[in-house]
Image (cartoon, rainbow over all chains, first blue to last red; front, side, top):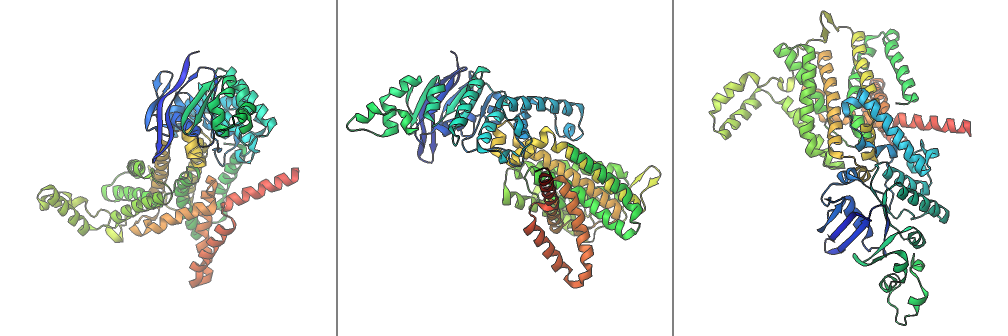
Length: 268
Length: 345
């Protein structure tokens, strides 16, 4: 399948600490690609580089053949890459519905004047915003929470709202940063279904996750990061057997026994 | 804008219509007229502070630009009052864009300090008298290599237009054709009519894509950017809106009082506006109106305490901030919500 998003030789240097070192990789269109790795491996940093939140020290991010490395976050969003946050960043003092409606901002054009005077353009925009935002809530199964303050929803719902909000941008690629973090097994299962549904809409999913059973179940391809470097890449079955990956998760074994009996799931 | 706001607007409209019929005492009306003028400024400030999360301690500066533009153009150059109002808005918008672009990159205390400085600069310009201007032009002329006296002579007619520390009188009242606003009742309907219109505009704005984007910036700026909201133009935009509203208030003030002096536009006034918004409740534009009314009536009613009124004023403020940090309107909303859920549950 064609590549939709790729990073080429990306380095991120945080005051002497190399968070990401010479990272390269491709994400195939309409795939579910996962990035795994121990804490501090540079996964979130990489997401931030792609989303434009961090400008890399070196390297490029190519999306649909365009160099988007130096675009500010709002332009990256506009170009078709949406993201969620590991530590939730919902809009305070706004309802669930309003949180999703914000993501329709760039799809509408009415300005201060038109909005204050409720001119026809602004009314038309408002109607379109509501329709699309409601559709996203329905897709994510959040309609019953629509008029509730977003931050007063249960934690699991807030995670789903992050995804619904990202989808309202109608992105080509969605970056999910640990969407299963803090979810119970049942919620994680619903999440897996949602991710499949997202992909079947033709949206490419780039997933960062610690929940190994989720990653192994839904990913087409997995990249493994450790100390900011890519140490392995391949389909789930291959990654599960990879010697370097097991070592990164469990540490170096002197007897070799651990390698044969343990699989990366144990470290999840 | 929701049914709650619509009902509130209707009730508010009726109160405005009936008030001068019930309270005919000109003193009450005069107090309320000033409250109306301040409420216009506070609605703009509430959009900036409560919705966009950007503080300004320089609103008195924009208030001053509106008042002085209207005052100078009508009293000294014979302009029509309406052209004065619109030119004032224009000047304020330009100033707000120029000031807003660099300052709105600042956050929190730094933004507060920057806006405070701008308010103070405008205040100083208003305070400057003939002598200051002559000195300024002379040094400017020397720096630019012009003959100092030639330049000073050229700008002489324009120097000291503000009347310096003592201000200037003789500003005409608001008029439309042969009609002139003269009585306190007429002024009540003018000021509160403008409050009503601006309140409707503000509510429209809040419940639109622009308003939601502003609230999103307040709610989480990083996420707002990641969701495609380009924050700088929006922040500057709402700053301009607040400046334009303050300008209208300034023009009304000049035509109502018919005399202006720098005293009415000091830092104290800017702080006063922030307090009004905070007391009413920052998270709701109605708070700006309620807060302004409370903070205008309160000092008047505390006259009873004679020399201790300032002390009582401070005490009331302290109690409000301690026990209802969400403001009067915020508290009322919370109480209403809890009684409603009690009844249903």
